[in-house]
Length: 212
Image (cartoon, rainbow, N blue to C red; front, side, top):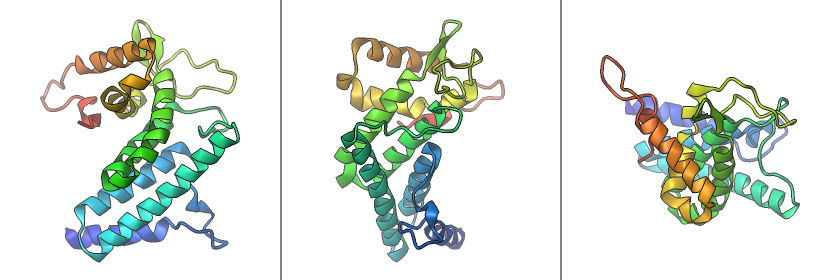
């Protein structure tokens, strides 16, 4: 099993460069979900391995993270949105995955926690705003078009992918939220905490996304 994981780690390192050598344009992820998944997968591999390969993984995750942190800071300094747009608008669930990846990187790289928190709080607060009212409950739409008019049908399963963002705000960001935002956080947590367990037993779908 360790040999398989080490092989996977080598493949991850090869697939995620940090410099553009002419043929490695993908060294900067083009979507919010890719930014999160790259950080999370690299961080998880580093957490379960030891030795020289762990050091290489940790260094690569930090380099990839630094690219994202610098891009965020540049957007803010130029008064541009650091959110990642798709052709059809902005995806709440994709940004939820980005936040989850940032948290994984913070666990691996605790000396980067302060910098990560700035980005993570910004994006997670936007994810929180992406929860909309649907029949008295809060879910996210599949995408929020550039027009600002989202679909009347919620994406209930993709909403679960955004729960880590809400959990992180609950644990670390309450003091930075408005009263209305704090109420929304509580509503979301209460809504999914009362989800019925599967008839055959086991975890609920929401519990699978719990960070704590």
